[in-house]
Amino acid sequence: MAIKRGGLGAATKYRGSEFIREVKETVNVQKYLCSLGVLTEDAEDFGDYLRDHCVNPEHQDNNPTMLVFRDGANCQACGMKADIFDLFFMFNPQYAKDGRPNYRAAADLLLAGDWKRGDEEVAAPKEFRSIDQGLADRYHFQLAEKAAMELRPGLTALDGLLAFGFTKKTIRKWKLGLAWVLVK
Image (cartoon, rainbow, N blue to C red; front, side, top):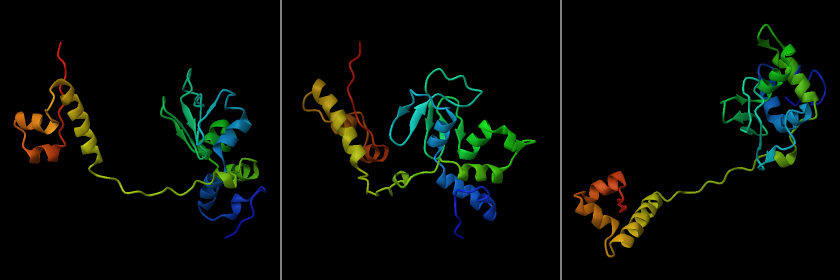
């Protein structure tokens, strides 16, 4: 069902919870928080997200620990995770009477605001690549051999593990390596 966005009452035209999905896909959380003046001027921009002080009123944040993405926010210190509706009700408690949030009213206001994502903000599809399953093993053995060669030239990591009594089957199964360490 095609709905014209931008006017009040847009969310009431949706059935069920379709309007919630529409708001989450449409509204940019970064723009919303900037318009409220919540994000400080020293917020660090990392491209896909901003890092700033936490907006959780229960968290006194001395260092910037909250990551603000286009679709939500996450504080790494206090563990707060919020989407656009969580943030809306945090700053507009009058729309949550008796602890029950009015999602339709919130959606109407959010869709009417100037916080929409632009075309440039649509995430590019992720590229799939095959992973070399043996790469970690080879890297681990190279590090172990380098350390072994520095202390005892000619000794490989495999030789050292075999000398300890490990079998090749056990070494492969448990992905073991050997590194010689100086003891004081």
